[in-house]
Structure formats: C-alpha cells, structure tokens
Length: 131
Image (cartoon, rainbow, N blue to C red; front, side):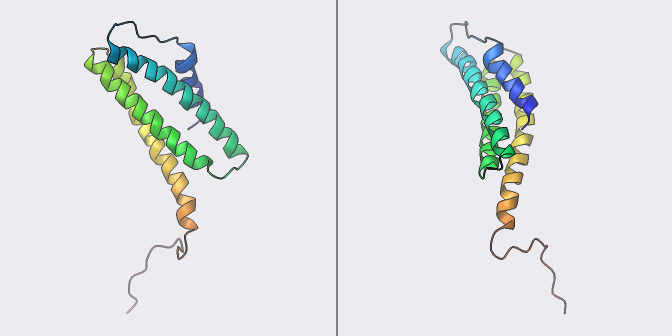
C-alpha cells in the first residue's frame, strides 16, 4: 500500500469526524469501527513505509496484514451500511475490492522472497522428462 492510501485512511480516521447518530447500535458501531480501523490502517501503513525504507525484515508481512485488515474493514462496514440503506456502503465495497487487490499483491511480495529462499527451490519451472 502507498503513502496515498495512508493519507486517505488517516483522513477518514482523523479528518472526517464520522460519528454514528442513528440510534442503532450496529450501524453506529460500524461507524466507530470504520473510524478506528482507518486510524490503525493509516498509521500502520506509515510504519510499514518506514520499516521498508529501513529494510527491516517482516515489513512485507505487516503490509499483508494491514491490507487484509483494510479489505475486511471496508467489506464488513460496507455491507452493514447497505443493510441499513446507507448507499455510501457501495463505495466501501468498491474500496474493499481495491484493497483485496492490494492484499493479493502484498501477499505475493511477502511470499515471493520466502519461497525463493526455501531449500530445494531453484526458481525454474519443473522440466519434463527428456527421454
């Protein structure tokens, strides 16, 4: 995930001032979850960027977890909002799809170097029988 993603999550978490005022515990709780989740993901992305810049091992794993958290957060909150006829839930579901792609990419970046360092891994595809 990028600095732009961090900025967007931090804006949602700190700048928008979202507060659930519907009186429904589930809906209002989802607004609170989105706000706090966006704060965690935004700050986490900045931490991953710093760790990656410093070449700290494990930064890619943390990036994968944050991307997964962002995907789950957007998907669950988006679904709740749609159930309560808040059409902004459609936007959150679209963001969940975008974050799912980021999750897949982060996972592949994290697993790629680990698989390449596994014993017996040559990096070449298996060859057929030469006979």
